[in-house]
Length: 217
Image 1 (cartoon, rainbow, N blue to C red):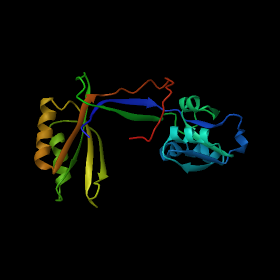
Image 2 (tube, one colour; image 1 turned 30 degrees about the horizontal axis):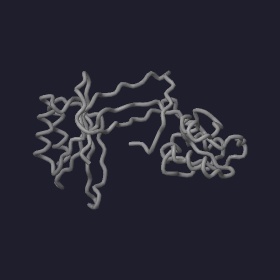
Image 3 (cartoon, rainbow, N blue to C red; image 1 turned 180 degrees about the horizontal axis):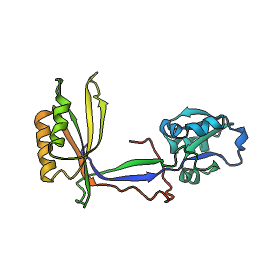
């Protein structure tokens, strides 16, 4: 799809243990949520003897439990999900880590205006040759461009071939960044620019943001 990243947003995510109103905590046996949310609350679940059950997402788990209550079943979702679907909050802030932040990307059409601090995201593939990835990344290192993330993902329909997702500081129209992208085009099999957008700043650790976590990045 021809969409571009408009912004990144970093939210402090608080997880709540939700169940139908009037449910006693002692009667809970199983907890459903997205696997990432369950992983972020693993120690809490183990400490209370609750069995995790993976589901598609957090808010969807809350919606489904509200529509079809089950004895002994709770979900992990946000306080907003409890409000939207009429569930009770059995326990608050059940995440294991006090630094539980999630990065979200805002997608849209067109390009966002340049900011004082920018970040660029792209995906690329490399030829199947020794040193190909090293040479591609070297185009950024040789120009002093700071990489903030690199991940590999399998290419759909092409076993054992991978796409690389790269984030770096700067705007695609900055001279050094533009030169690095052009050099990457010469070395890669495929390059797709996902967008240049304002870089987010970490929120205040004391801010209580009612984040609603979906399926993650």
